[in-house]
Image (cartoon, rainbow over all chains, first blue to last red; front, top):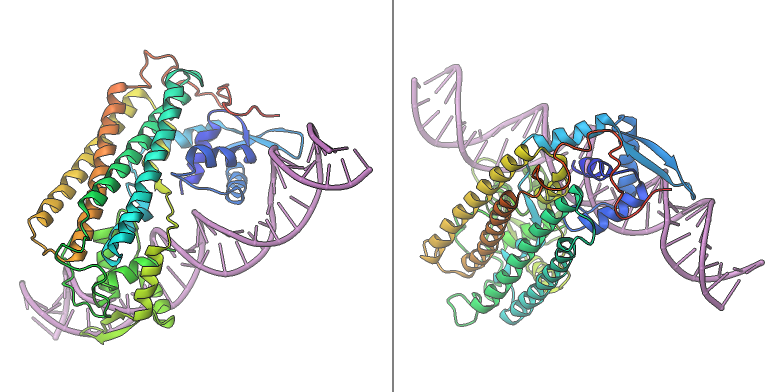
Length: 200
Length: 200
DNA sequence: CTTGTACATGTCCATTCGTACATGTCACTC
DNA sequence: GAGTGACATGTACGAATGGACATGTACAAG
């Protein structure tokens, strides 16, 4: 459950309301850790109950800003310190790749081109952000620099995926000419030898 | 819910039992789409009920193998065809990166080195698999070639993350020398400028 | 002075996920 | 013949997630 720590981490930068946090989760962490406002409000209540955060102020329209407590800060730090990192990265794109052999070659090529374009465009956008940060447009505080580092990871991953999609399209591994036909294996029991082992 | 389609995709290669599928989900798709056996058995029941798969055979120890039906195959194909790809990739590694500024520089350097080593090693392992596949050790069927393509994505992503971790460690953006101190912001109200939004 | 929009906070429910627990089979070894 | 370990299938439950619904406030344009 990393939403908890994500919220604590954002609150470590300064007080914020559930609404703020929802927006920032969407904008900054949307692709790497999606979270909707209902979940966020619920989690904030639990965090407050646990004494990791507390109400900082009340604003205009029922706005309730929270502030991290010493305990809360200790908890994020503890989480960051304990080395146990979960290295799984759920990606539908990769899941689909395992089943490319079920697609028509033309369809697959179109799909790969769409994917390439998407990742290339995302990388471009992120690179623009990174350049702006490098120019110091958002200041040079530690949080900004941390975000710059995170941004760099996003850039590299998206570039890697864009180049992968291009490679896959050019290699055209499911082409009709290759051994193993396009719409083949349409029969219920294709009798394929279950490949012993592989890793993703 | 892509577990459904993942199972259908694997069954499209040939009949398999829940146990088989659990193992293959773990081995082949473990990092990109984790699934435990309870969830798999449950989903298989639902798929059978929906007529997308059916019992193929009964084996030694209560073993029950399923086979994909025409309907099921049509459903995977439909899923692959409809362009709607979810591009979110949940990665704890990236989530943590946003909060690097809360870590001690020495701790952060150690963390980045561990991460670099992990991703480099994973990439190495995957590259070995890819080479074996390129040598045709698992045959040259369409499924194997699809897996090769997926594998390539895994290699590139892991290499990108390894190089990112190295870059981050060398850049040392949270170093004591840089503007913005190491273990700073240790007080409950870190007084950091709440970046996007001030509170009311 | 009404209407639209962005702000702001929540409840409710159906799935999905993860973990722990429970059960039973078969093959092999000691 | 007892024990171990891999095979094989499930139930149960609590937590997480996503989406729909509900409510109310402030502000600006018309």
